[in-house]
Length: 589
Image (tube, rainbow, N blue to C red; front, side):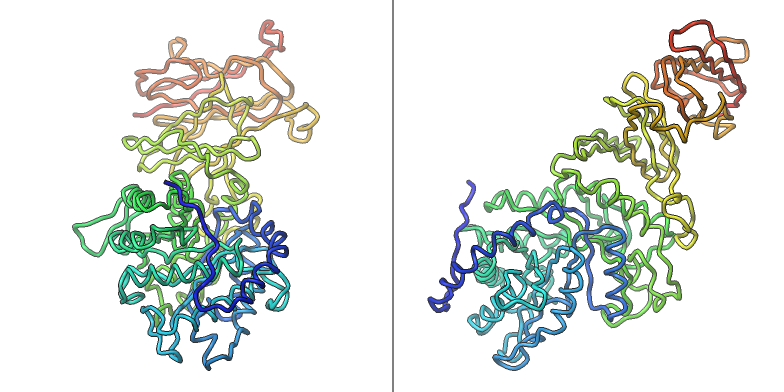
């Protein structure tokens, strides 16, 4: 049964607090619009720990460039009680003001992780605060300082859109107290935050890993009398290798399946009345120890999948850890953990490298293609665990965009149907280089191809890189006048020789009726790949010799050998062909 949220005032607060809440409500209306817009629902974020000013600028400038809309400020960079209030009643907000203001001024939504311990009050880390009233006083001052209403605000009135209470409380290093006491802390914190800023989101401490399910289940059981958080957070790092769907643990006989993990999370949320809570992952990356054989390309490929796959399962916002590599995380330098190795920009303090990785440009392309989509309606088109082909359909302002990839070690073909345009543009998600240091121009860094759509279908050849597929709609010939070729051209297929697929490209200087046919050496027709009218421009078609063509031809059982492909072009009325081109190709099994 869905629970009704109540506005609860924290115990111990004097009655004037209620008056303050009422006075702030009008100001919060405009503020709520800012926090509730489309960018606040963006799935793209990063986590930042304890950066130097220079590292902070690299994170900030990089986030603006790639288009990320969320930053999680955690650790000593977050709001830590005993760093803010070192002396009772005296608050030092300068460091927090500087960091939060920098990101807020760039329009980036801010999630702050709160450290609820304070030695001054004998409140030990990982335990329920010994003076809950003092903690409440600190927390409400923090929320009011960053609620953007113009009253008791930090300079510039920056807004913190979401508040997270502690971190990874399934780890004894972070929370040695009982589940019941963490639940009590969440209740107190939720009441305080909502009384100061009813629009702010409250996030439960991120779950470190699947072994935390039992502890979080107990915590939620102690909080099922009402709603005390808006967002459930879990972390998905591999500790000893793995991929986006399955992580290896340090126990060589044990691995963790992502779908099982997420389903258990959804189950405990549903069982305790939190069915409507959003699910985020505020720490996402590959292995915590740079796995042997990982390249910039494999990291970029992994990044795309770690956003799209969880997004298709209901994870609404994902924070990559990190954008600019940290150095010395946990007091250890070098390539020792994911915060030091999985950033999108190299930190020279780790390995002497300082360039943007391929994953930086992949992240930027991903945001460019998928920002503005409704991630609650992502459609799973294909999840073929045998052939390891995955296709997902997004909808951006009414226009479909597909993301497809192949997890196998061999090239696969895949068909997308239901396309209403006559052509699509396929863009590989990873730049066409081995390293990001070779990318001189982002706009030309990705391989793209224009594919012909026949009977609402297009066939893709999927290699190692995920592919974005978007429809191309031409409103008039003049719209593409600059790209119209001057003559009919039939290009040599690529690859050649091939097995089992190859791409055939051709150019048309005018709208024409086109037939593209494949023949064997005896002149027998093997497949008809195109048979219809096409607009002027560059076109390409994928021919498969393995199991037939997506365009109606029958190419089953082809033997190795030489084949010919013939392009016949006539006027749109379908009269006798006035232009014919032919080339040979070789299929080798």
